[in-house]
Image (cartoon, rainbow, N blue to C red; front, side, top):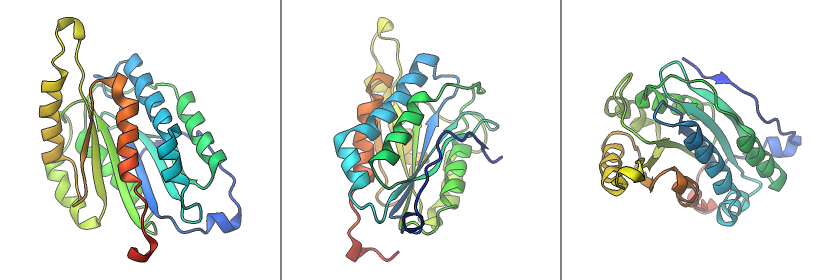
Length: 238
């Protein structure tokens, strides 16, 4: 099922900017399944906004304004729940980036089923990236705090994606109740191995980790810095 679209931002671009080449299409899929409570949802959304607002990520996004990065953000959980919260938006200047950050901070949680359909979330992100074939690089950035328990298995979806040239990276989130003993480090090691084997795609793909939702913003900033490494024009054929 295609995602329902929630238009949270509309940026007015000049004709010249609108025709600019796209150096990277970056789709970010955020886990809003039942294991993510209201507080964790807010930490995740505000953490993404803070990561985009960090100095190093801002510099990476804006370093080549004539060939901008395009961003899309969607939420996923069960099979019927993928929802776009930020449609494809070119990051052409500071005001555009500020509008994106403000929209994410203003986004409120919606109702979603408790399941974790990670394989379908992979397909959803790839479908969005297929709308941007002109971009030099296409990257899907999936966040999650658990293994898939609904829909197709991620390991069975990977072979569909590998021939497309799309890269899938992951940010895994360790979740625990510290009052019962902090076992997040051990848990996140197993979850990282699961995403490494079953989810990420591409020769330069990787798994970043957040030790709980409190660490999500810093982990996302590290991940975005790595994903947005400057593309050298002489080495790229658009």
